[in-house]
Image (cartoon, rainbow, N blue to C red; front, side, top):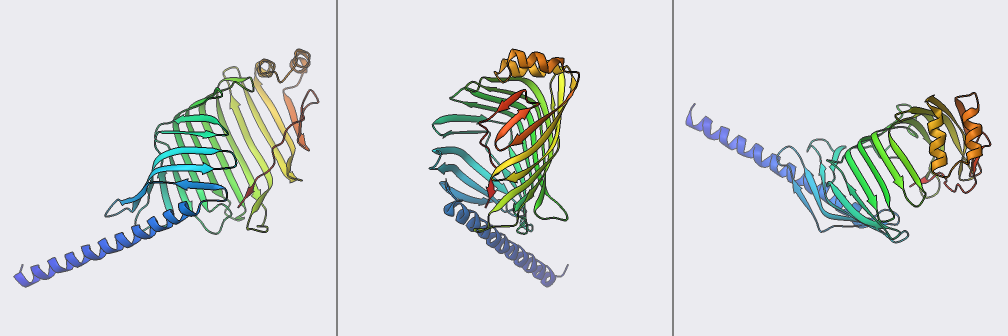
Length: 317
């Protein structure tokens, strides 16, 4: 190769490397400024604190690390230490992200201390400004979760997957999917204890058009399937709920497969069913029941009535 041609080639390569380095630095700096601006502004009543945001990933990625991230909220006295959070993104793709969380978090909510330990928790996000939930599709993957609180609430599971996907036709409709394996739940204050079970859920959520302040309301929830698999029995649920005066109203059909007596024994053990109600329920010659929810009151075949149900559909702003 002639000497002049070789020199030109070196100059071209150097210019390309310099140009790419400049592009990478500009792209990474813009991402860093956007993230820092979002964290500094907060969200509604939520505040965020952090010590630094560093840029890494050259040459093909513009990864950010948020150091010592904390979540703060005055209303419910939330002070949660997340730790170092990594945001991974290819330099030529602005809309796709992967967020990697540290394996352990600790904090306080309403005076109760919570500790969460997990294996490689991560979120896959897609930024879409044309939908009410801009970070959708969203996929959350969890493994070996262990949650404990100072009020003796304990939750463990082997693995979990949560996904949100917008409808291809209606931007205000979203499909939800949740799958968890080997869930163990114990809530001491509510005297609730469950044996290990697997769970799979699929639902569609319809949001209203934005109101004042660009807030969306949940109009309808269509429960396509909720399946709880215990060792002795399985429970399958389907139903529809609509937004009426702030409360979800509707019905939820429940079908048993296997030993349904075990389910009602579980309700008795947790104080949700009396011995008389148990006797009637297990001796009814049917394996399908119906939950009715109206005006904040839950009823199950008029056998069980929970009248202090205060949940309402939230707004998304």
